Length: 441
Image (tube, rainbow, N blue to C red; front, side, top):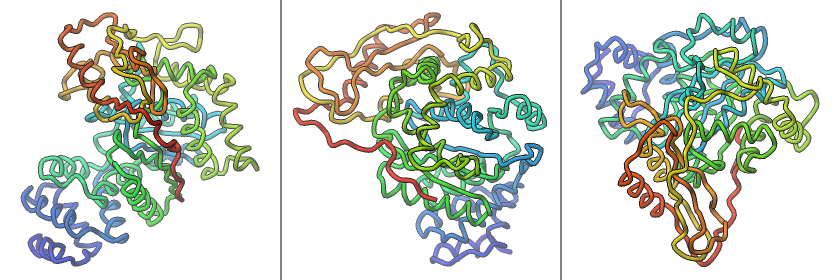
């Protein structure tokens, strides 16, 4: 098989066969295909797209370029949930313990923060002693112990995806639905779960900026999942403002605890319960509940102590330190260093959420390079969000750094300017946008 011919075929809009796609992925993985030829095919895919069969073949080939986890030891249906990223997204942290109360077992492979989006393992990393680099060989132990395990991604899962993503990042070929969908789903399929539930975020704080693009990506991933024999559901959620009341690592974990205590933000509770309901139905664990009854059961277990107890089990099982049996011991706590106030009267009309995520990173909540150390106490607390009426001088949000960290005044003032520029205040109130925009299955 000739790589030049495969590039030419896709360049002129042809449909690649399963054998041609496998030849490409195998060659990328073993490095027998040079980067310039791989990049050429990626660009041809960006320009001419792929059909369902091509996307499924590409995803399967990438998934099988490394280890496919065998979760049969769970002796039950396993569920994997994935988010396409956002700001203030603490859904996974709340979801796993909630699902455990319904007897659903989850093996969650999560990454560190990327760009303006926060990383779930970084948030768990804010807890003293918590171990999130769990070898796959130890998953059965943790799943038996508390019904869930969370770990950073294994280097042996879909190695072709890592190579191709690095090429896409430097060749302007990231923004392609077939390539995004196959990248995400190759890791999900390699993860071995029976049910895949996708949180596809949409808006200024997401990689899919419009609803139409989010819908297209969601449908593509469902097509791939179905084609691979996996029950797949997608929930499109609003990320046109930060989710909940904070972004940062310890800040979001503190918000998680407030949510378990029944004091969480309504948008977080709604997203968590809707995604949980889809997981529960797909796993066959609804026990006759449906619709509002199932959502009510999720909301009740989220806040009545049931999920909190499971959360504490998860923390303890992976070595995290607890006080009072349920509250984690954090590596650092947030210190409110500066409050950002409204420059005029009006309504918060919009928030450039990606700018907020970048601002949090500039405070130390994220990394600029892979070797940067995180300030776990850094982040932003929100006091006014979209639709809220404010008067000049009212607090919009506060900028935090850790109590053990130092941050120069000039950095704080620069971040304050970034945050002020992200808030748009108008005389008229914005239209309400549902936090859960659509469910596809």
